Amino acid sequence: MDSKRIAFVSVFGAALLSAAVDPVLAQGYSSTTEELIRTLNTQLLYAAIPITVLVEGILIYTVWKFRNNDNPLPTKENRRLEITWTVATAIVLLFVGYASYGVMANEYVTTTPEDAQEMEGNAVEVEVVAEKYIWTFNYQGENVSTSGTMVIPEDRPVYLNVTSSDWLHALHVPELGLKQDAIPNQHNVIKTKATETGTYQLYCAEYCGVGHSNMLGEVQVVSQSEYQNWLQEQKQENSGGSGGNSSSGGNNSSSGGNATTTTASA
Image (spheres, helix red, strand yellow):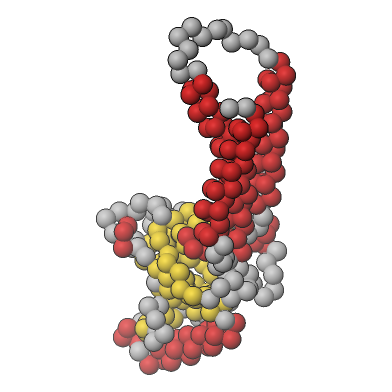
């Protein structure tokens, strides 16, 4: 098999692998964070496919060609070949480093304290408090708290201040590309913008005890108008509950899903 055949087999194999992964990559993105992460994964995948096919093709060809060689000759130095693969490796590493830095430095993937301080005026800020074995969501500036279900608006920046009231937990919403540790006495901020309405599963991704597997929640992404209506309903329920249900401490169950609304301190 000559070099032309090796090149043809490599290109053909790369095309087949690309066609196989295209249906998966064609799916829409649920958030800006997920789009950034999946786009990076796609770029690295397309860079890795031809390299993998080429290396494996050469390996298979070499094993087959010299399978009956009982007296192999010593390897000879080939400076041109060594320079070629050194330069090629450096180019691949530069591409991977540049692509990765462009994503990891984005505020929708890695949020710095400076990003949190310069929050946009229309942003939603939610304090996410983890405790065994439940999630509590406190909407900053809205006098609204929910347990189990977090509701956020579509196409609007959302800052999540993740913390814990007991020990280590981790917020994980795979479909939105969100993951952050919940550490006692520490707030870790993540920023996202949901781009598709729907309900997304929330998990605890850090083993936290016997109830870890049941420490689940939901993230509901709704339209802007639905979000404002939902906030108004929660405020009205809080206001009514604090005045007429002193024996239960002003706690009411919301009628709009799994979220339990509690009255925030005035």
